[in-house]
Length: 202
Image (cartoon, rainbow, N blue to C red; front, side, top):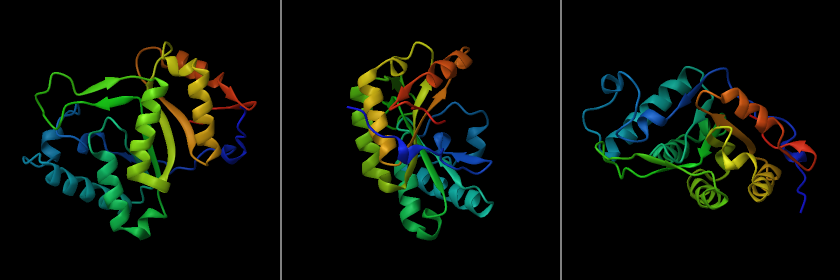
């Protein structure tokens, strides 16, 4: 069934610089120098407080785009808490998140694996509901996380139909890319259409 994308005709507006919450949403991450910026105590509550401090500082400095992902540990939860506590900011920011990786480290820094990639329709449906439960109507942009040219997300018509439905609800649908062939992934994504319009807007 064709879904009209008229509600998503314009891309989500963003500020020139944003704040990504990958490094504060979970206790272990890849950023260099991260230990200098985070508390020695990596409990959930300590990381929640630190994320809120960073969000406050970013907002005060004029940052209006905030980015999370399902694989960023509890980043969506921390962001949702911050938005509830600061209603004046909640209506003044653009919120993006990403799906396609699942955080599996269970808040352990020594886990053998921290995230698992899967761009299937089943993962989208599960993670979309998880994101909806946390961010609700605050979500403006939902991206596929780290798309590469071989990603099944670029060729799955059932997934495209679900993403088109989300776009028709007013959420901008996009991709993020990684790896040495990002240009190829972007070119492939630009070819994906739904209802005669480009599906991916970012």
